[in-house]
Amino acid sequence: MDTKVKNKIYFIISVLVLFSVIAYIITLIPGIPSNINDVIYMVLILIAGVLIVNLVSDIIEAKANSKNKQVSNTIVFVTRLAGYIIVIAIALSSFKIGLTSVILGGGFVGVVVGLAAQASLSNFFSGIVLLFSKPFNIGDRITLSTWQYGLIAPSYPPKFFSQDFLVPGYTGIVEKMTLTFTTIRLDNNIPIKIPNSIVLQASIFLNNEEYRNVKVRYEVPSSIDPNKFIETAKSELKKLSFIKEIPSVFISETSFANKSNIFSVNAVCKSQSDDLPRNDIIMTLIKIKNSLDKRKKH
Image (tube, rainbow, N blue to C red):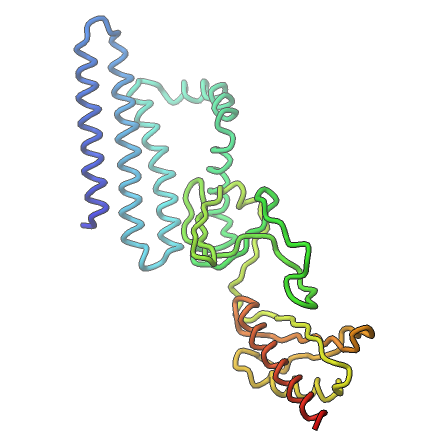
């Protein structure tokens, strides 16, 4: 048995023994109403039930995690949800509260609890919606963009002569989904836990596509023949292993002040990000520009 599971079992036993001793001592104190015993038993059932449900879900997660993360996450999610409902039902029955009384009294209590724990309940029900709607799976690389979190796009272009738009969001691998939080391991290897209610409202960009269109803009002196540059660029870029087909290369802008032409390259690349393909494309364009510039001088 896993050491973590053993430690959790020992912890549960210790907690139950401690609370049982405290409950027994309370019953020995004179003057305490008899219905206090029922309250104590209900509290013990709730504590024991929640701990056992968490232990079972942890064991399921540990056993199934290596096989299929999405399946294990769903099983753990449903196990905890069903387990908590069963524990609450047993605890109420031990307190001699019938189902009819629970339904009749649940209206007022539900309003009070709902107002007091609005955020928590929102995360809980959002987690259920995410579980069944499945906008993404465990292991998917996503970008989550939402107005609730303070991400501000820079007011200056992130790349020279670039018109690419920026997505102000969090990008990473989905690691785990619980009843209240979704865990994403960001590209900088730092995990972030986002409330499910935020995830449900957010824009979600799925980065799982094998190919993506990468756009690059590059400035070349107008003294270099643009037709020659376009022809050479297409020929050389086609040799890059990650480019699927011949890229389109064209003049998108002319700068009379700098006496230059600005070329745009659109290439379908086999990659889940823009950065690495863009680096190799720019490096290739630099070599082409330098080569054509040397030929012109000679």
